[in-house]
Length: 106
Image (cartoon, rainbow, N blue to C red):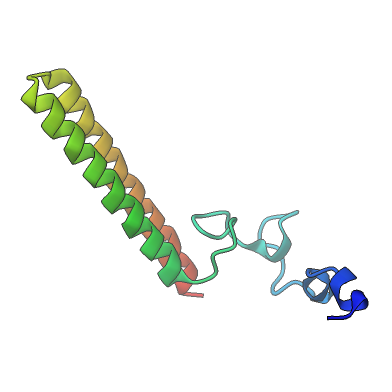
């Protein structure tokens, strides 16, 4: 690479591009939703769903480990709390998948 290519801004190409569509939300370029995976740059719905599945699996493993630990020590309140945490994981998973599917249909 020459010195001129190394000094070039890597985002220069994208700065020259116009918006893909009119802003649906004033002040947000392109009107893209800030849903899961889109603020962070994930463009593929498959990648977003894959990450949601990964997060759910990892969270479920941690919750099950906690449940086994607390049940073995007969700490029922904390075991119930772990079940509540799992419910939050499942609810969040369904929301993330819904946002990824919403992106896919466009």
